Length: 386
Image (cartoon, rainbow, N blue to C red):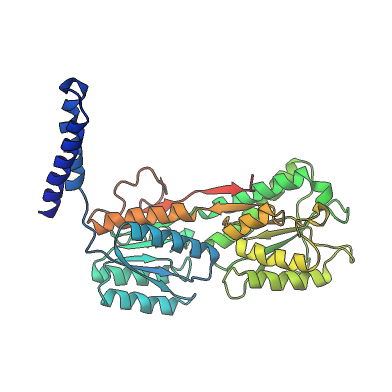
């Protein structure tokens, strides 16, 4: 009733304004009725989201990229004028499960979940079971809910769920291509000891995480493909005793602190004085790149004042901090993981759910997985500050 009254009032207001501005019926008086009807239709089609009670669960607020998604999503949910509550699991799946139970018991009717245990069908299925028992939709985002071998099993088990994330290998492929092209253009300067090879360090965010696995693999493989095509040898991991060819954050937090600790220790043994300096740093995310750069700064490298002391560093996410480092000449490049685009897609699905539509209604313009109909990919993009 209120919406119909609003439509009538809006129609009257528009009609009056249009008539006041018209010199004669030949100057568009006939359009006033059409425009007023459009306004009335829009008012009548407005969706009432006042009953929405949304619970948003983040694996941790301390992850810089997740923090940026949270900021964007909070703003978009505020714009929708919906009730919502954010939860920080602090990287603990048990904590997140308890938070979900609490949210459902206190009236949440939509769950938005950044799962803690990435790629775990067991953890994701537990969330699905909770949502299904309460007959409420669930939107997973960012962190994979199942392994590649199990693709579609979780997302296909409940008709009121969807996933918004990224195509895991894409960032690794793009980062590897970026690194390879950079090295080909500046090979002799990067090869500090002149042995004809590039010695690299790799910082991995988390064991078992699909994104981390793909970035670690393809960041090197694709760089090697570019190098060998240009007639250069493949990259050589700096520590021949490490058969994994990476150093992983022991807490799985993709943290700057972990990369800083590793890099500080590495540089005590692998340096220009010993003629075995690490000549390239590849990181699974920008936080780890920041940590590595801080360790390099302590040794007089990557200060942004002299290209001859620049050790190439590459990350993923295009966080504001990483962009500043690139602008300052302390970091070389990153792969943008679109926080705003991810938040916008989640908000779109949220509006669908809150208005009683199917979650995937109207999503044909998004990049949807060819294998799983309710899995949306937000594309990556290269960023070098140019």
